[in-house]
Amino acid sequence: MSVARLLVPPRAKRGELVEIRIAIQHPMETGFRMDNMGKVIPKNTVSNLVCRYNGTEVFRAEMGSGIAANPYLQFYIVARESGAVEFSWIDDRGEKGSASAVITVTA
Amino acid sequence: MTASALAAEPKRPEPLKSGIDFSGAEVRALQQDDFSSPAMLWITRGEKLWNEPAGKSEKSCAGCHQDARASMKGVSAKYPKVDPGTARLTNIEGRINQCRERNQQTAPLRYESDELLALTAYVGMQSRGVPVNVVIDPQNQRNFRRGADIFYTRMGQMNLACTHCHDRNFGRKLLNDTISQGHGNPYPVYRLEWQTMGSLHRRLRACFFGVRAELPPAGSQDLLDLELFLAWRSQGLIVETPGVRK
Amino acid sequence: MKIRQPYPARRSVLKSIAGGLLLPAASPVLAQIPTVRPPLEQLVPVMKQITNGAPVRESRVKLDIPHLAENGHLVPLTVTVESPMTAADYVSTLYLLSEKNPRPIIAKISLSPEAGRAALTTRIRLAGAQHVVALAQMSDGSFWAASADVIVTETACLDASDIT
Image (cartoon, rainbow over all chains, first blue to last red; front, side, top):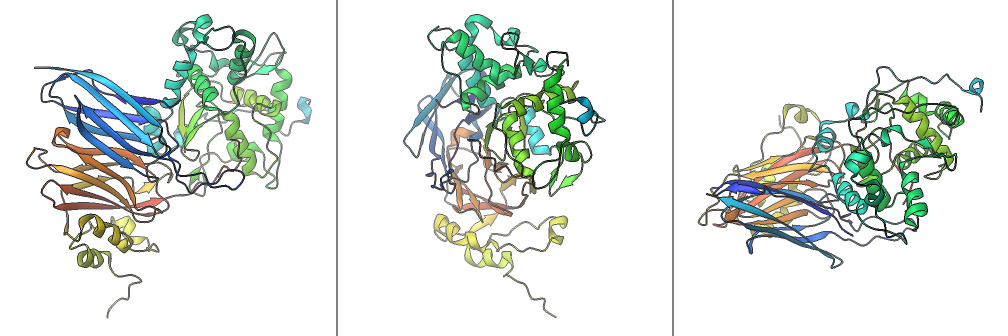
C-alpha cells in the first residue's frame, strides 16, 4: 500500500496563482544500496509523475535516484476553471499510483 | 537490581531540553510543517489503518476506541505502562499488538514495519503538545531501576554509558552533530539518515551500535525498561510525535 | 607572479565549453575554504548533451539551497525562473543537475504556461559536497542557469544496527 498526500486549495479566484503540493511514500531506491546479504537492491524510483488540470497536462517530473526518499514536489498553477487536479505516477517496477483533488474557481 | 547498585542516582538533565532544540534549521522546518513533514505520510497511513477492520473480529481500532483524536489524546504521554492483565511493561507498539491479538484476533504487526510505525505514530500524535507524564509506582519500580541501570552502566568496546553523552555532554559537538539529551518525546520519528520512519527502539539500538555494544532486540525487556526510564527522565517535555530528526 | 591553480578556474571552463555560464561569486566564507573537490567541469558533458552546445546564460534562474546541508539524504531546494509564463514565452523544461552524484541528472521537470509561475520546491540527495546546477530551457529554446555550492556534512552517530 502506497500513501500520498496532496494539497490543493479547495477554492480560488479565476486567474489566481495556486500552490500545489504532493508527497508520496516511496523509498526512491538508488540501486547503489545492498541488503543484509550483500545483494544489490535494484533501482526503483518514481520515474515519471504527471499532473493534469481538467485533463490537460500542466506539470511533469522525471525523477531519478537524486530525488530524496518519499518525494516531495511543490509548484504552481493558474486557477482557470473549476475542476480536478489529478496526479498519476509510475515507478521503475511498474507500480502505479494516483491522487486527485477538486478545485472550485469563482469569478 | 537494587538502587544501591546504580552507578548514579537517577537525575534529569538541567535545563531539560528536547532534541529539536539541538537540531538545525532544516530539521526544525520539516518537523513544524504538518504538510511537508515526511513523517506525515505515516500519519495518513495510520489514520487509514485505525479505521480499517482487521482480523476475525472484523473490528477496526475505531470500532472500540472511536475517534482517536478524542480517545487517544494524552495516552502516549503516559506510556510505557504496566498492563494490568499481564503485569508486564508495555509500550504503545506492544499495546497495539496486544489489541490486535486479543480483540481483533489477528497476527501482531512486526516491530519496525510501516504498519506498526504508522499506527504508533498516529496514536502518538494525538498527544502532541501534552507533557510526558509517567508515574513510577510499585508496579513499575523494578522496570524503572533496570532502565536506569542500563542508562548509567558503561558498555561496549567504547566503554561508554548513555549518561556520558546525554547528561555530561549535551550541547557539545560530536563531529558535526550536536549531542542531545537523548529523550524519547518525538518518537516515532522520520530520521533523515534512515530515509524513513523509525521507532525509539531502533534509535536506541543505533546508540548501542554507536558504543559497539551488543544490540538488544527491538521490543525486548531491556529496551522497554530503558524506554520507561527515558520517559521519567523527560518528564514535562511535550510529546512531539511525529518528530523529524537528522 | 602567476598563482598556480589545481584546476582550471570554473568560470573559464564553463565559458569555453558551455558557452558562457558565469557563476555567481562564492560567499566570502566559502571562498576561504580551500576547494579539494573536482571542478564543475564534470557537469559539462551532460550540460552539452542537454543544450546541444547552445549557450547557457547566467541570471533569470534563482536556486535556493542551504550552503551547509545537514544530511545528504534530504536537501531541500527551490528553483525560481524569471518568466512571464505566457503561451508565447515560458519555461518549458527545468533540469536539476548534480556535479558528484553517480547520476548527474537529478530531475527533469516539464512545465506549461498554465503554471503561471516557474517555481519548484523539492528535496534532493547529494553524495558529498558539490555544486548543484538548475538549468532552465525557455520556450524560445534559450538556456539559463544558476549554480550553488553545497557542503554536505556526515553524521557522527551512523546507524548500522540493521534492524530491518
